[in-house]
Length: 119
Image 1 (tube, rainbow, N blue to C red):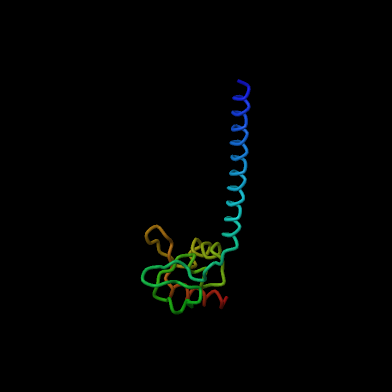
Image 2: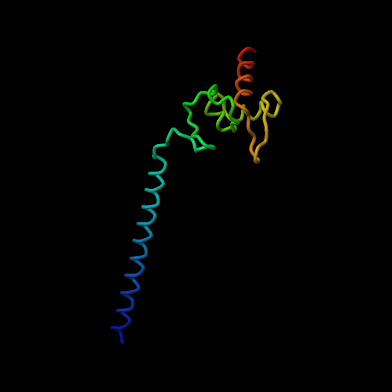
C-alpha cells in the first residue's frame, strides 16, 4: 500500500515540474517574440491607397489631384498630425469628409502651405 502512495506522489511531482518548465519556456518565448517585433525593420512604404502605393518619397506637388488623409499629409509635410488637425478645425486648411475620414485635396494643401510660409 505504501508503494502506491509513493508512486502517485512521484507522478504528481513530475507533472508539477513539467508544468513549471513549460510555463517558463512559453514566457521566455513570448518575450523573445515581443523583443523581435520591437526591433523589426519598418518598411518605408505606407499601406496602399486606391490604385497606387503611397510612399513618403512622393512629393506633395505630384499628388495635387488626390485627396489625402491626415496621416498621408504628415508623411508629405514637415508637420505633425495635431498641427494639421488644428489648422483644419480653425478653417485655415479646407477639408472634406469622405467615408468617415477627414481628407484634404493636395492642391488645397499646397496653397495652404505656400500661404503659411509667406506669413
